[in-house]
Length: 588
Image (cartoon, rainbow, N blue to C red; front, side):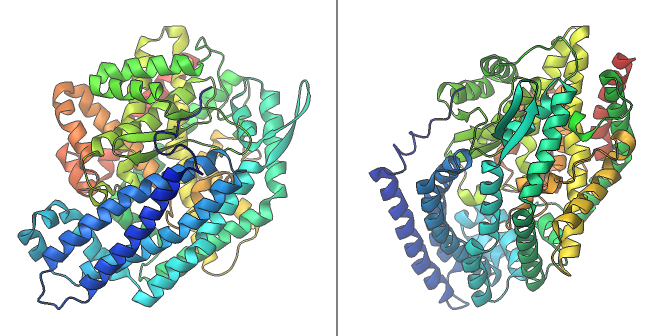
């Protein structure tokens, strides 16, 4: 399968072009530091609006330039963790990111001292960045002293960031011996996890047991990573006067506690329906209860294989059926080799889309020949389409929280799901519905388990370190509370805390509930699209272009949604319930 082409950005890591761009960012950071110093020296009656214009111009240009380098280095290290040169350069760039973070904190503190409404009234640039200014005014209330913020930024590369890198390196380089029919095979962890999709239950069981045994061998450093990151976040949140890391995450998700509680209430109400789906799938597989390793098991359907070239054709066709703009975007991504497809040793598990510059993105996959991977492809291309719609906005205007960052990806994923289901013959529908419900189950049920787990870890970590045994126990408790009798309680996955890289970021706590928000918000949008296609299309791209210009409540109101009540979320979950009903009927 093809690998992505990074040469449009730089010929190579050791090229003069990369070195020049690296040095340019370094010089721009120094220049912005000087300008920030001028702003901080201003008297209260000085022209703050004019000063902000100068700061915004320099900061936006710098962030455009630094984003390309950061994305380029990450693209190399996440697909080849053995590349020592890239890791060294990334570590070197971390120091520049630290300097940039310190400048960002100083800028937030400066904005906190200004009359931002007067600035917005006086300056068109400030008006264009009104949401950014108002959010930073509120954020300034949660800053430590300048010296403490500077120290926190300087320590992060050897603290939370280093712990996260350790997890990434260990998990991507972990080789696992799996007993298979043709003998024992030693393969990368990402390939082992792909065996969860194997049609043979014996293969899935063997892979599951080998996986758990492999995580056991590295549980000590991974538990240290988890404790290091969660401990750091706990301390900083307390010092910044956040009631909890969750309150901090909610603020930066651009939602409020009322909206989160409303969504979680509806999610918990839906669990009995998801358990119906899991029991129905168990019936198809000929077992009384699914084991954790059966969650991704394919059903014996007429779906057939999905090689990557077939997936490209299908996704482009469905995107084009929505609009030529979306179809052209998909075609460009395939033609210009934006995607790194295959799993391999040294490559991290999972998938992501990274915006590089203007409307250009790159997508990392660990593709397998199944419709589930086709949905992942559409999902990640949705992120790329979002980047396309954001083109023309400044980096300050593009700051999109995860809750809204999932809007386009879920919508694009839903497009291909619904079309495929509508086009399929009856004997194909069971497998298609299974792929859809499998994804929904992950984003509603499994995401809730991750949310409950992370919440409990933060609470316990505020008192002391947690052992690997305790982390496994907390993970099992969360899975029992969500999957219930839908899974065999003796065959869950205690090491899911080691699997998911989302836990290992000091900058993104609770990297879970925004996925559910995005799914259900996206389903709500898709429902509006079905009701009024032309009216929806007239507003949708503008909505995507505005995700950094308003909070989730404000954007939802454009489409008549009230996300602060459970009823909205129940409506989206009811769409899934109808699919579960249909799945049960097909199972018989």
